Every structure is written in C-alpha cells, then in structure tokens.
Amino acid sequence: MIIKPDSQLVADLIPSPNIEPRQNGLRPTILVMHYTGLPTAKKSIEILSRPDCKVSCHYVVDVDGHVTQMVAEEMRAWHAGASSWHGETDINSQSIGIEIQNVGHNQGYPDFPHIQMAKVRDLSVDILNRHDIPSHHVVAHSDIAPGRKTDPGEKFDWPFLHQHGVGHWVDPVPVEEGMPSIQLGDQSPVVTSVQTKLRRYGYGIEVTGQHTEESVTIVSAFQRHFRPAQFDGAIDQSTIATLDALLETLETGPPDTIV
Image (cartoon, rainbow, N blue to C red; front, side):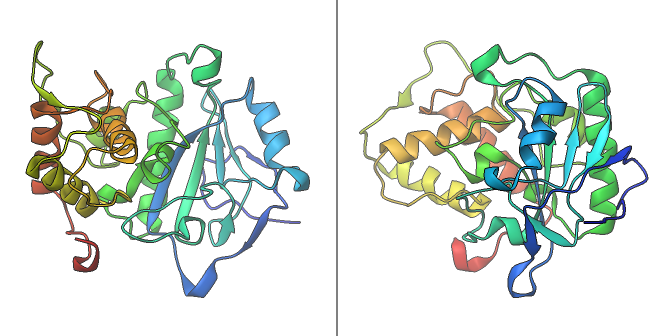
C-alpha cells in the first residue's frame, strides 16, 4: 500500500491497512483530536497498523513533534468508533483523526510537551487550510463519544490551539466555591435549556429536562474540553455561562435540523 504525504510536516509514512473510501460522498468537515493511551508512539503505530486491531488514524504526533501519516486524508480511517456530532453518526467518513502520543489517564496522564502541541498546531493549520472545517468542528474524541472516551483530556491545550486559529474557545467563567449546581436526577427547565444548548453546539444529547446519567456524562465531556478546572458533570452557573459564550461566538451556526 502506497500513500503520498498530504502535508510537508510529515516525517514518516507508515500506511495502515484499516481504511476504506469515505461513504456517500462525504468529505472531511470535522477534525478529531485523540491521545493514543499507549506507552510509546512506536507501539501506537504498531497497533494502528495491525489488521486484527481494526483501528487507524490519519496522523500520529509523537511527544517530540515527529509526525507520521498512516492514512491519506481522502480515505476513511477507523479512529472515531461509535460517535456523533451534530446528529451525524458516521464520523469516520467526515473527519480527519490525529492521534497524539500520551500514555493517558490510566498511566499517570502527563502533560503534553510544548514541542508536541506546537506540531499539533502546525499540522492542524495545514489540514484546515485544505478543508472547510468550522472552528466548532475541531473536537475531542470525548466530545463525539462521551462516556466511552475521555481523550485527549483536560490537560490538552485548547487555548493554545485557538490562539493560532485552531478550534473554538472562550475563556471559561471561573468556578466559585459553594456555587449552587444541578446534580444527577434533578429535573428543571434549566436542565432542558442546557441540554438544548449542548445539542445545538453539537453534542449527541437527548433533551429530557432531567439530569440523567447520560446528561451528566455529556456535561462532564463539555467541561473537560471547555471548563477543565472542574468536570464533575454538575450544571452550575460557570458551565451555563461558558456554554452561552461559546454559542454566541460560533463562526457558523449549527444546522437547524438538530436544534
């Protein structure tokens, strides 16, 4: 299998066999950030190259910024799994996936080195220059698969990327000690409002008016990305205000069909 690099930032080409054409004429409109959750980039690439593992990605970025391309951007990689964003569920057919080397939460979850984040920035800018991907479609794996995934996690430097034109961000409203919040099982119009706004932003949440386990999980995923100082899944004023600010600053409004 022969592929050509899509970016001048690619240092190595190691093709993965776990690919197929994008379905139904779909094209990349989402950029998904992952962490590998494995000990080394070498091990990650090995796993992503094995047919029996049935996973792949477009790019792997090592801790030193070394970029390996494994799937051509025109092809469908198997990185998102069961997921959704703006009501769409075949995320693999409309996304590009970047795996960022980090051992993950189960192995101590170290910080992402600046040299690595800088290369993620450069690669992302390069990708965005080739594809019409709106800022709020640059997402975490945990955004599109909340509950199942937590990567790239609360230490991922979204503000740094946003400063360089990658992704959507506002400064989160600070968490105040003793701030009242809505907890698991609570039911109120506030819950309905937050669920509706999260759905409008892109999250696959059912609007029930009750803060169910699913609702808590999705609020936690939102917080992990946009309010990482605290991601307990409780609905508090900081979460509401941060979500409102994000919606107010969207470059492109989400489709009316999913509001």
